[in-house]
Length: 139
Image (cartoon, rainbow, N blue to C red; front, side):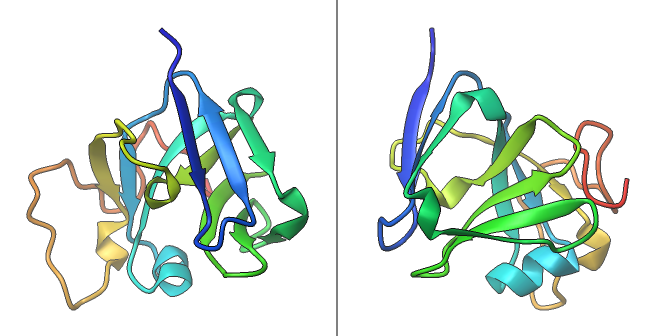
């Protein structure tokens, strides 16, 4: 069965649709994700061929490193996407999906870099840096 999910930024200027299987939600606690969101990223990913974007003219890409870029709405500032330059899939922020999303949490990465004002006590696997299954910038 093909899954069909939709989502958008806060103001609705950028909308997206994903089809097919989505990976579980990974919580990234690295300093870049913390600085962009004010907390941490919660993202799934989708093959580029299964991602449709409407309002792409309102999407701004910021090259956060030589290896990856972050996509956000140029109108409301909502963080929406993370894209490794060499991979054929895009990470999509879990909170941007319309409900019900059907997504489930999978793990935490870069917990060694997490903010000092919270603890992680949800029982999910935690990785000091990345996990073997998650390719990130710098790897």
